[in-house]
Length: 217
Length: 258
Image (cartoon, rainbow over all chains, first blue to last red; front, side):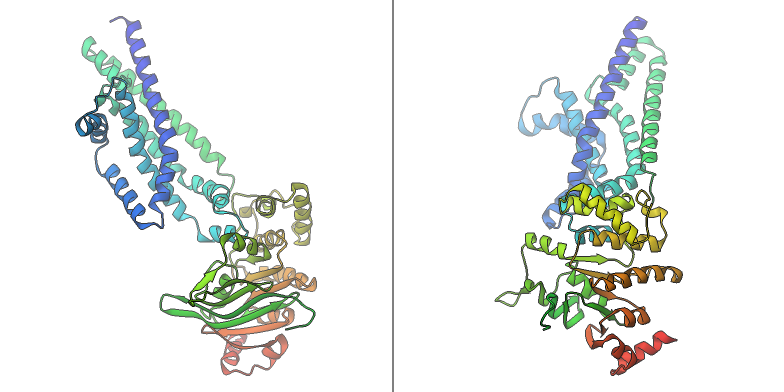
């Protein structure tokens, strides 16, 4: 295998990892908010259903969830999925899993805001949507930046689990190269990739945190 | 019923319980335009709950609540408490303002935005007009130059003055104060009382829950003494403070003096 081929394979893997990362965030950050609302709903059956969903997502291994989403259509419904389903299944499993974690982070933030903020908004006549968008969410977001950062950093590393479905992301590629080359250089490069990726995530989240540091309560 | 003054708030036979404890027991209260009413009483007497029911933060279990003669909450034909539809309640909220004990300013908004955001977002009023009025309100509150400040950069007294300005910016017919000085250091209460005094001089209709007895005596037209969820005694401010008739009121006033 030429060096060029190796670099090409790893670059392709890195790009795939980055895609898993961003698509998961784009899907799970908003979905998590919807889940959080369900978790706090006044409608008891919905609340319990969402609670159950969250407990399953948090209580079972992500790798198992990946397999169930991947093999589910065939074993449960007899539907044969195409080759691209590997990537789609990865995203579905990741989004469902991360939405559950994000939901709990949102919920903790929303419930930590003093009731007086809601009451002031109500007396001033803000609608429910205005209260959430203008008063509650900006303050909640500031409070949940640290746990959110943790979760996003975990996601960077979790993208390597897509290996189990044969998605050609960074770890999959590195492993293939290592077994054909007989040395660990590809693993080393993969390690540097994940580390740099997370350093970037940490740096950006710190910037966001600073942007919200203009006030305190 | 006074002949010239319009009735703004009318509460009749209000009842409110939290679990098994009844905190309001057949309370009736009527406030006319331009009146300043002070509500006094020991903690747990139901004063704050009464304000919270009047400002729709809590729902009454019984009785009748009216603004400008319009029934907002009343029992239906089966005797169950019924509130007006949400749309009407939303409109009614524009008739009153509430100043909280602990300000409840929005910490992520500047002083100016705290004051201007509700008129712009809720009342959809033109920005220039709202900003001009907010400037005037800041001046009136002695907060010139604080437009860009954040609540966390202000003293408690300044924060409370911003919250009064925020309530006034919506041009309420009646302004409620829920122990507006209780969260403040003693040296800061004076500035809040001054502001309320000047509002009283402008005949702003106000209901003030307070522990500042001499202030209540001076500024209020009428004082209501509550204890145990009922109105024990009410009357003109000076009469009630200087010549309390009821034993519980006397005991309460004596305890405050020491």
